[in-house]
Length: 495
Ligand code: SIN
Image 1 (cartoon, helix red, strand yellow):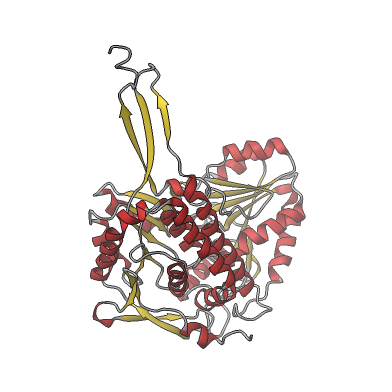
Image 2: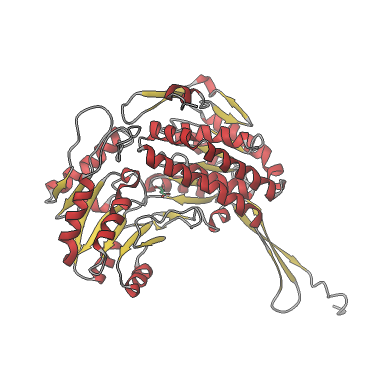
């Protein structure tokens, strides 16, 4: 059978709000346009939810909560497992949709679908493993029973850079734990979440368990939800400034929050590193998702003794990238998400250059449609430049030089962010020393990718709170309840 055309594929994606098991229009029939970042052309028009639509979704989630929490964990897991099978069977459709709305090359979209589907499988397996404990108090008398229960209706806010994986990384553990959900995907890339919702509903999610609201005014929608007593949890992936505002709003009701925020990952190449392996690691850590990832290597710190060789090889590798629309087979770097992002990336590069940095490749906004920016390597970069202090979110690799391990650690830790650090070294002691000294929630040793559905993803400092994935991921959606029980032998003992 031949693959559906883009038009046929888009025609199969729901474009309404999903509330209480049904697709419906937004209040007043408002809609917005989703565009292709490779061309700027419109792809589809999607319902633009009002605050009242958001509250209707929360009401549906609240109505479904009790029964969903009582649904056996095995049954919840089996629905997620069927979701995994269905996403995998339709992976090509999902990959094409991701490339259309987000821009990344098809090969990367396929990898994202596999990564995203894996959260459904992982949490389908975690659902029945939620456990409590029963213990005797240290004095040998009362019994302590500790149980886990779902926190309740959750607002899940996902970003545009990994349209399926960031949705499954939140929805799967929430649903596995027995929580109902209001999902608000990014307005730049809502189509993947809408198709995912249909797939999960077809897999058996009952009405009200997964509600989806798309909107161009996220602050207006989330405000009333965060102050509504029916909402019990907020999980957000996005920028640190927005995360701070959401946390401040959530503080009013002492709402449980998980925050997966910005990063500014240091990538350390030590004097004893395998330089070729470090270059390949840097290519993936920098260029995965075109640098539009919170785990992207942002500051490449290289020991002076290998700096020249490393920088030359990195420049050669990055110059070999083929920039173009993600749907073209030869493309290895797609466009940035929008003009605002491109302006920011170009502005950081221009600012660094005017402060003394040298461009070894790239560095210039190309002519033509789409929001393309070339792979760029900068050298003679200093720690006080904005490009080193801010998250770049683009295909730009600033290289800085260090002379000893202490200086490298000081420089790596000198950021308010602490999501991930990467270290390339052949010395085991050094690798372990650095992994203990670097202030980040994740450390990659001799690898440029740490993301894995079986691992706890998350940061320290201004990079966030909580973990997604791994055995830790489901905990974010569970409450601990302790029941104290009188000593069952008390009567026998005459007490
Ligand atoms: C992100 O950029 O927010 C997530 C990246 C990942 O899961 O690898």
